[in-house]
Length: 318
Image 1 (cartoon, helix red, strand yellow):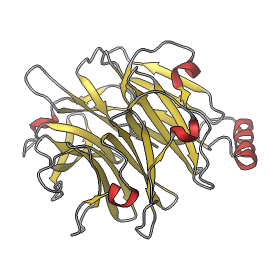
Image 2 (cartoon, rainbow, N blue to C red; image 1 turned 90 degrees about the horizontal axis):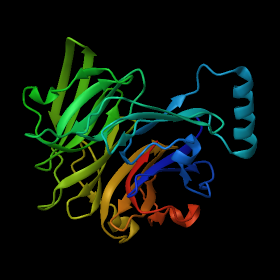
Image 3 (cartoon, rainbow, N blue to C red; image 1 turned 45 degrees about the vertical axis):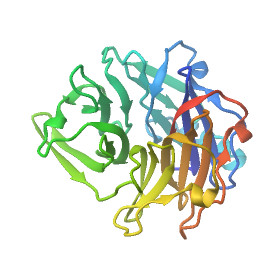
């Protein structure tokens, strides 16, 4: 699939905004597009989304040829679908995708699951994890099939019991990384079919420096290494590689002070670990870690390239 970094941000007014960066030359699309305007339908207030790239399948040979020519000649279109699973403020979920020539489509579920507030997106052949609250317990984890049919709604009843979760990030095809209320990072995996499923729950040794707690996180696999990026309760952003004794490194120690942060996402692309984080004043800043372990020595404001797009509250990379 083409090397484009897809950036999806949600603003404090519930808009889903999208832009992209070409890995080949580092050039950004010159604007943040409002996905709802492309959909030509009023969808409501979005609060969270996950996103991935899907290989282009079941499309005409003519469309493949057109997209391939435009991508190679003009660096305009990727050769994949961008697939998102956003959650609306009323608890309903949606399927949104953008095809090879930039056309957007949407389908919104009917279930009024008002408790959902965070989710990961994965391959339609896999499963989707959601975080939700009940009147008696917060930070519950739910898993559903990608077509929306429920597989399990109480996997917090595993042994050992999964504690209250604060944030989740896609780890592998059917597994996630998560932060717990007490600041731990855990990995949770799912396998099987309804009535014959199993879960794997593993607490890592990664702890935030000092007395700070980790609240938001991103996760990416590069070769045999698992990279974790996280936002702490005090607004700092950190990076760690599981299994390394060096532990957490403060990203701003390399890139320079950029403010306090509220959300983060990371992605492996083109041999680099790309990191995007949202500041308390609503900016999305971007940097990357090279394969040799060095970092881009600054965090760039994406809106310096795309123009003003609103006050962001969440960010997702694909």
